[in-house]
Length: 355
Ligand SMILES: Nc1ncnc2c1ncn2[C@@H]1O[C@H](COP(=O)(O)OP(=O)(O)O)[C@@H](O)[C@H]1O
Ligand SMILES: [Mg+2]
View 1 (cartoon, helix red, strand yellow):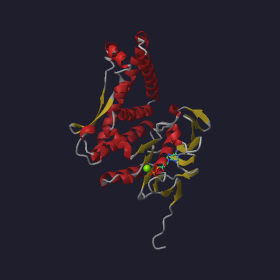
View 2 (tube, rainbow, N blue to C red):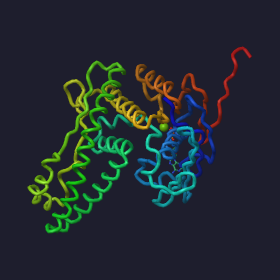
View 3 (spheres, protein in one colour):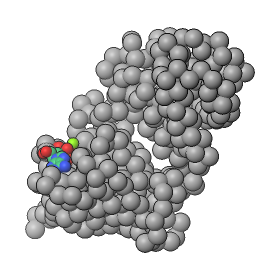
View 4 (tube, protein in one colour):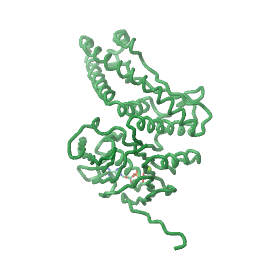
């Protein structure tokens, strides 16, 4: 299967990165360097330029200290054509352009990148909101419609909550209709997508050598049939709390390993394996949907101490058309190796043996 290719990344005032344009070949690019050198920042910039997405709590954090605005640009080859994606950041604003034309996040190609990082264990051990974010972000990329429904749903919840806090019981009829319509679509889409996601994650977990079976399931706070009724019957509670207590914004993605809830019972190592399986499933689903492998970004393969998982990461990187792998050591077998130092990346030239 062909893949998305990042041919170059340019950055200006992005975190600690020195202004530069880096070119990336097909195959694996290995980036190594000490802690704090800017390896994670570079992957974050690549992910942002390819997808328009960031999980930084505040956009200002991405702008180099002392500067007002930052800029990243990706030169991309996709399906035989070239395009340029640009992201400008400044004071809480994010401006996206494709080939010079302004677009919204939802308009960017949605299957361009998958990012695997050590913090992914939080998907297993962290709160439901992290798992919801994983699911929602993946499903929004699989379906633009899902993304649109979800953002309208979330806006409606916020407005409804404001009305609940203000004690505007009379306004609920209007909000509830919208909420039920959008919420039902979201629940049904999640149910449909979960079957394949569960299958792919289970396979990956098995390939990673786990002898326990991984199962993914939705834990729903209500159902499409029940939603309207639940909203009405819990109105008093909602008015008292000033918030919407039922609906897909309260659901969870249940991860079960063997017979037990992974978040409560899995070992740290099992948790890392599960998180990796979820990312692998993400990669496969996006590739199936868009008929192209995303660029694979692997942050800090050296943080992975288990030899099995470390090898799995390296094999995975070698199996896709393009991957960027960071670590405190060099990734073996890379087509290009860059040394990271204080936000700069320089090519590490191999010394010929015996020369
Ligand atoms: N907005 C910013 N402006 C300047 N430096 C930043 C900014 N955000 C983070 N940094 C710096 O970037 C460095 C971390 O880089 P990082 O990419 O996480 O390193 P690593 O190579 O270990 O992955 C830290 O030294 C941090 O202070
Ligand atoms: Mg790092």
